[in-house]
Amino acid sequence: MNVRRLKSRLNIIKRPLTALWSIFLAFTIIVSVTGCSLLDLPQPENTGQPTATGPGLPVEELPALNQQQVLDDDQIFKYTLALSEAAPDFNALRPSGKADLKNLQAALLERVVDGDTLVIKIDGQSKRLRLIGIDAPESFSHHDENLRTVEGENVSRIVTALIEPGASIWLQFDTEKYDQYDRMLAYVYLDENIMLNELLARFGLVKVKSYRPNTHFHDYLKELEADAKSENLGIWRNDSELNDKRKGDNPMNKKTIYLAGGCFWGVEGYYQRLAKGVISTEVGYANGKTEDPTYHDVLRGDTGFAETLKLEYDAEQLSLREVLAHFFRIVDPTTADRQGNDIGNQYRPGIYYVDEDDFDEICDYIDARRKDYSKGIVIEVHPLNNFYEAEAYHQEYLDKNPGGYCHVNLNLADLPLTEAELAVPELKESRAEGERVDPELFERFAVELGDKQRYDRPSDEDLRQDLTDLQYRVTQDGATERPFDNEFNDHREKGIYVDIVSGEPLFSSTDKFDSGCGWPSFSKPISKGMIDYYKDHSLYRERIEVRSSSADSHLGHVFDDGPKELGGLRYCINSAALRFIALEEMEAEGYGYLMFLVE
Figure 1 (tube, helix red, strand yellow):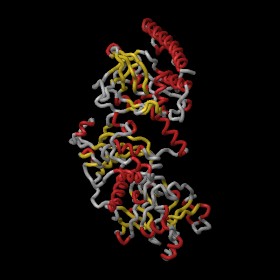
Figure 2: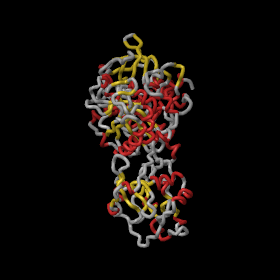
Figure 3: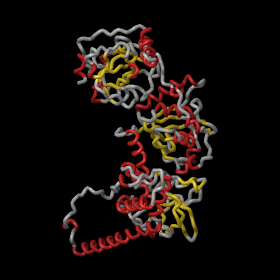
Figure 4: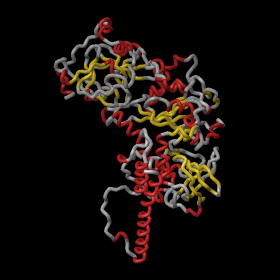
């Protein structure tokens, strides 16, 4: 089907809809004259269909916008038809209500450039116009209009099918009428009921971006975008489908961290090039002392804001430690108020967290990297106090301007992280270095088994022969294995976990839970008396180390951030310190007396 036939079909649809609207208006007039109330009429049965606030698009029937080929005309038609049938009552949602076209600037559409850019005729002149507050996938390279992109092409053709060349449109301006590229900036109304900006945001065809100081509808558009995301519409369907395909029924472990590393163009460009784990990026201004700053405000250096990347990532694919290792790769952590050629307080290095649990790991990582630098590390680590999205032209800047300024070597993103960069601590944490702690502080919910057997520690020679290098380093030298990349982090089988050195029973599968930390976690030991506790000062803050009581094997640490319903503790244990005994093998292995704990 060609484009002309497609638009003809859309026009045919519009005619009966217009007729139905006229009939409804006539009926309303009759009701008002006769004094009848709609409440007196039989009410339709609740069918569960969406209201004005929910489109209820048949998402599973619509083609994905990220597919590898451009949508054909029939698929485009399906999208535009679905949007026409499911469009909510924007007048009821829009803060300013129904548009008064008499007070808006009339114009004619000449052509659609892409999902957020039009060429219009106004006052007899052709002008390029940018829709305020939204950012569509690019339908062409900024440097070569013949270099098309699939997702952007699909969105562009949907918008083209929605508005015919020569159609009347109405423009509502905000604070500034033009941007730095001499493009007009406006909210574009197709009629008094529908604004194009809101339509595209609500159905997930664009991202919502701040266009300061033009922010009249920004919060409203953000709400529409949130609805589109929650319903996996349009471009937002991509992350959900890819995640389902990758992990089956397991949900994505979405986390957010804010990274200040100098000019945010390069920091964003680097993380966008990582092969896995990055969900989304956005640049802005963090932890300042004013409200709603502009780029020029921050550039003065007296607002307290730092140019910052907001990074959303899947912690199942990209751990926080890996995020930090990449960050250290592209910044000078020993220099304050400067990165590359950029000098000023706004270019200071910083890590701002929103999850309190991240603080410990951030500090652990920084502490582990101190030995790699001759000068002290000056990266500031603070909770995120505020973050304001930067202007639209800063977003994905290096994608739009591949030759633009960048203080970061983006090619480094293609290189795997080294063990030295990951800096997983291998620290001696023996009990000789810390004061012993009363086990009753931790084991009030643990049972006490009467018949405690004797479990001896083999000789060091036997251990070196029987254990792997990692098992030896963890249990004897206090090393720490890599998070997520270990044997029992995702282990779900019924049974018990014993000391890899002596065979002493330590934990039950009944008490194992998924904490998301990357190591196997338990709420309590299998019995009182099996574990010894010591204060650990190997890092700059105090932790509680746990060791097996019989063989003195280093196991890990215990923290007080576990599930409250399980007692509030989290025993974070190295898989390399454990051996698993399955329930059906416990009798033969001599642990039959413990089967009641896991059956």
